Image 1 (cartoon, rainbow, N blue to C red):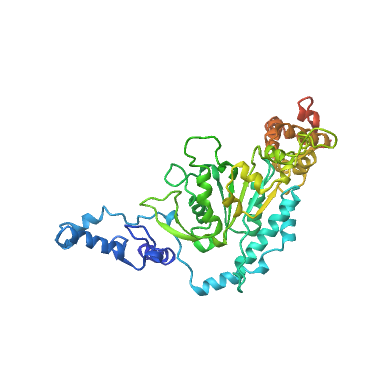
Image 2 (cartoon, rainbow, N blue to C red):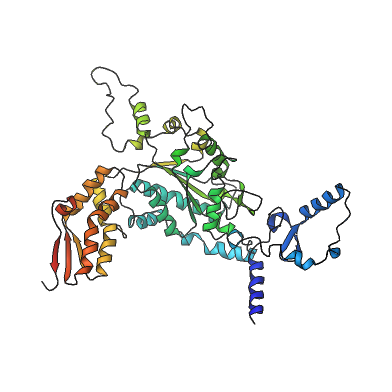
Length: 457
């Protein structure tokens, strides 16, 4: 009975996943029909012909496998199934199933831009302009994907570049919108990318991660979103005499992927090698979002804006823009080129927008308003111990003031809260009579104690 079940499962996997050539590692959809040998070994016609040509070229007689004694013992050294589960690619669905899937992902299922922004408002505080830009861009992108340009007018895709200081919510914004739209999202770091042939990840590894997130379903991956973080680290290195293998060379390698091309990528691996199966992904309908903090870009913008500075009445002063926290809004393509981004790369990211730096009021809203605000998480943790946790207004202000001093954005909030909540989370479970804890500003600053109320009081 168990043998029958295993056989049925094996046949089901064979129907769902593609077969690979044992020698060249190409899938059946690319290499053509494969010749099946014992022990799940498959050979394409090209490799089979090359083998015969090699034998004939050396004037060797055809090898008669039947003359080899203990042939069954020889097969036991051959891998039964040499491709791991993580490297198998699902077969493309039939036309009927593809049509049903297209009808399922219709325009009716994609919310309008104002609805996307309203959903983002529940999770992301502030950044209204950035949320509006990304809502419109994503909505237009998926309209383009689903309609597939039904007439002669071909709509170009709008890749995005978001610029903002660290901790302002760039990655969180992309994660939230991918979660709301329920599409595959691959988040990768540009710092690990290097030029082909050097130690590190090739640019194709970005698509390998997207394919893995999509469950190795090529068609699903071709509708996904790729977020490349720390894109500013790919800027051209200035005044260096060594080869720049992780800067301009990587930007040039990303050009064809950003614009849209058929790219051959390794499955289940970050780099190509002889033992890794390959598949082809078309990036025409993949939306690329790049983000980075671009440190010192403010200085480049200031130099451009104060170029006409002079001495005398009415002249622009050099320090005119020093106190402007949102000077990044004045960024232009020329500023990005001076920073070290090549023009061809900038041209493939037509939608450029900035995120605001966080001020005191935004920090307080981050603590209070989002659905999964960090203070709400602590309240829930203590509620499981039947203890009410409250924060007065002075506590919110004290936390925001300390976060602004750290200058690491919203990431500073958790470090601050973890520090003053440590003793409370340690001591409260020891006493079952405690019913409420009120955090004050003095306790956050380290000059006071929390207010503790006992049950029944």
